[in-house]
Image (cartoon, rainbow, N blue to C red):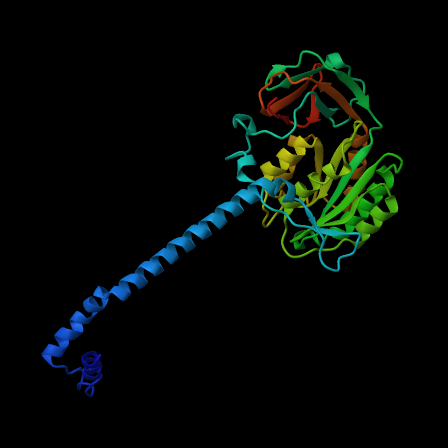
Length: 401
């Protein structure tokens, strides 16, 4: 240690800066320079250093393995439980009993179709329940939009994965199906200017359409957060109070997450033994800033749950929004309708049309034409000489038998 100590003392013998250079000159004897250069090699040859390096290396390796295991466990855990947690309600501390904030997790990737929305071409994309009977509700209107009420079973042709359905187990025109309705209001900054008019129209709609003896509804608002302001109830007064209290919950617009959560509210109704009509009326400009889910997720869960989405946006006739196509797609794929209100004066008439459609639906059921699991495309055709508009969901999901 004495020799090494002298080397460090010599190295610290620093002269004044050289004139004009600004660098420091260090004066050491040649032999001391040689020893200084050999010092790292001698240290590396030391057995204690070897042992320390081995211990440190093993510690790092074990740490990496442990972290990798934790990551793999976390990924597996989220994949197994995301179906339950994707829309699990989480009550915020101090939150009123009449509302709850929903925390959403991403849908596991193994349940998502890849690429663009075309699940029919993706083998193995299935749901957890079998489909012994396909149930389909739809509306038919003439070219002027007037609903057609007098069609018979022989007037209807349905294609299941492009294969004609041979026979219907049931066919009827239903006017009094119990409603399971969701009112979903966008409260983000982009629509706050028209929110009072939308709330007023929603209040009028609920007052007109809800029949407490058979119908139930819930009220949801979304911005940066998604909040159930009133859980499913037949109490019209509670629903209208919830619409009145509704305000912006957080910054941002989680549009797709809100609709995904709304569709996922329907299992909370329990196993419906009788036929019901499930529908969501969403008032939004469709402009989402961020969401865990996307358009194909919402369409898939709506089709699986037999939920029709009626989408309503407010803007001028000439102000065609880029998000109108999103709202139109949601409505077409799920059997609902898309409306544009140019002003608050149009809202009452639009809600009256939605009410008429919800109360006037054709209902048909039939066995699947193929046993192929996964997505089945549906197409409803009307055998009449007149041009007709059919609004029906465009597919269903079948599990392996």
